Length: 158
Length: 208
Image (cartoon, chains in turn yellow, orange):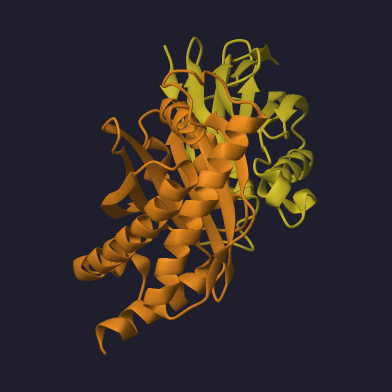
């Protein structure tokens, strides 16, 4: 079983579902899970901040996406105190022609996830972020394990 | 005026401009490899950003992508995409090798694809600039080989909040000598302010 999470999309599910998103570049797959209830959810957000950019649906931005994802998990029976997080993505492809690589959208998206998870008191258990490579992400909500596939590298699990 | 409101007639005009650009690019490429290459633009379309990763089939499909900044009177980026197999065929042609010789991408193949991207971008931007009365130039190219979804979204999103729509220019290559065809995709990604400038210039061109 696998449920696809598209760009600017959020899906939550109970075990034994696998949540998948394909071809992540500068976007982030933000995953939250409650290990006791064996439920989890994934947000595929594009941009770091809805307060400086606001033309799109809330699923597109890190801050509003995290609130939505958390709310959906609580509705499904999750406990705010038990929530754990993992993130993947945030690549800086084409870095050699970025005016300032430190400010790439990939890096800003990673930074946003770190800041927001701290603010929401959700521990970040593991991450596979940055670099210049694309990722496909498979999230097993039963175990919280995340399998990540690449084009030119062996897959990893975090 | 917003990009979604572009009329068919204006899209047709842009397609004609792209075909002129393709003609210039064909001349440049033919000279480069001393064999006749013809380029055509069978379609030019507007696509919502969210649909773009699926344009080439699966967002996991491996593609060669060449990204360049647009410099001059407008700013933005151009992305040239070839499915991996097409990029290999193209490399054989450009390096004068037997078809099927190239099976992986080393420095030589990468620079070959980058150079093709730069020639195409220069030709398209030259034609578009002439039509709009603006000066448009491509920057040095940057090339990656990765999943189409990752390449496309990074090209659109990596540099700021993007437009809701992107302009996709399909480009077909025809190597006359052995009648071999292959297809690539060109994406025009103007920044917000620049899109306004392009649309106004098109509007003026239509009311002259």
